[in-house]
Length: 113
Image (cartoon, rainbow, N blue to C red; front, side, top):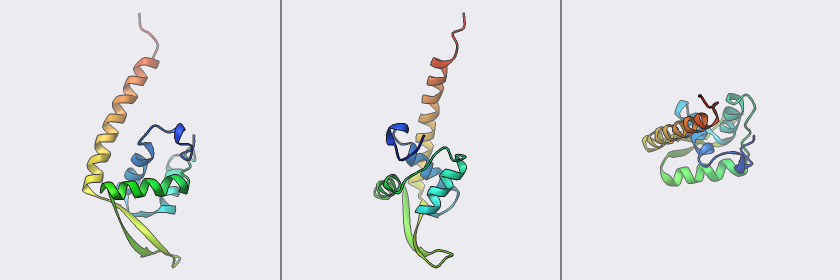
């Protein structure tokens, strides 16, 4: 499953992964991509074509904020940071996801007689 194939992810999955990643630390776009890839054991790969539009939606919603900085290699990068509103949104989305996952688990579990 790759994040660049949106049909493979349920709606909001990419946003949840980004927000969770930013909960730990401020990151620039490339670092976000690498963090998601690494923490998913290379199961998920986020493409720039999916990442940056998602970040723009989250900036507009007030879930993240951004500021320009200079990376360790001297490049100008935009660092993204989770806002309090973003943390609240993440909590709600994770709770909703966990309920959905529990429902799916119940449907897929063997029928007990």
